[in-house]
Length: 121
Image 1 (cartoon, rainbow, N blue to C red):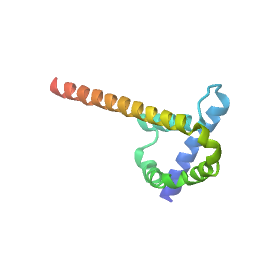
Image 2 (image 1 turned 45 degrees about the vertical axis):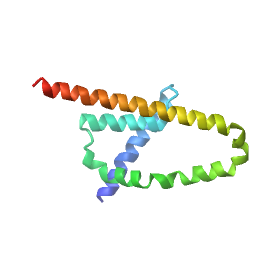
Image 3 (image 1 turned 135 degrees about the vertical axis):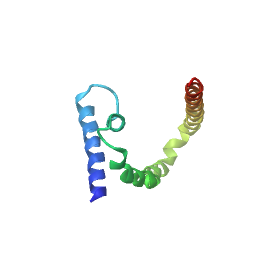
């Protein structure tokens, strides 16, 4: 029964994200709205982490299986993708490096900030 409640909470937040996507005229995917709603409810304490942790962990563990249909679709269209393969791979490489660099800098900044706060006490 615990997992049914957790799935209900996650699906409810997902539904709220879908509703926001329909009513707000912004070019933001419904899943992004749902993620921000979940983040907001977790930060405010409206939803406790324990209330969604088990199902969330299960979904994270099985995420790789969710990409199988997309991969099969890409393989089916391989002939059409050959013409754009090089630019596509270049964009993936550059964006991956950019994300890694920005993530590293943000993490480094946060660690340094925490060390300064602890050192000032």
